Amino acid sequence: MNLYIDMGGTYTRYQIDNDNMVVVKDRDIISLLSDIIKKYPQIKQVNISFAGQVKDNIILSAPNINIKNLDLHSYFPNIKFRVENDLNCAVLAESNYWKSGDIVALYIGTGIGAGVISGGRLINGFSNGAGEIGHIPFRQAPFLCGCGKDNCVELFSSGSAILKWAEYLNMDFKTLEELPPNLYNQFLEGILYSTSILITLFNPQILVLGGGVIEKNSFLIDYIQDNISQYAFGSNLKDLEIVQTKLDNASLEGCKLFKK
Image (cartoon, rainbow, N blue to C red):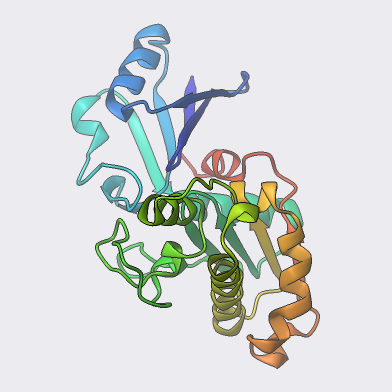
């Protein structure tokens, strides 16, 4: 029996083999695993898609989740774990769906991140940190990102950014359309900026946009298509497809694709 988990900045989703997906909120990963394994002692393999930095199946850190240097195998020694960054999982699922070996998945939800497959190979980076597009410098904010910096694009163009700006300005807005005009424009610019960097650096055949913010604001797809030529390297835009994900939970589906 296999357990698949997608642990994001807001929600955690899990599925046992092909059973129905379960969604929980504000659950500690150790207590959640303990409860599931106690209920299903037949579980021998756990694959996890995690919204943060992962290396060698160790969760190193996360900007939007309070976890550092966590080795799950030390808590559950009889279980085999495969832990991977959530966007790496997502781009594997997107690659499988779109049948493309040159594809970038840009997901905007609680945070903003990317997964890249180029020439049929997943781009991991030396310490498995490739694709952290949310933490490129954009402009200075009056508060800190979860990574410790104050100039990340994630501070302007993500779900968590909306809530942080509302708290800082002592205003009551929770959605993109409720943002004051200056913040709304910065949000859009940050998305174009992030998208253009990915297109310019990786020259994908397909750019897939997903995540909660995209799902609730699908007009962003058209906005990017209409304005990206002002930002990205022109030659890399030729024959590029910019699409919205068709998958309900690409990160969860992607973590199923990793070999045991």
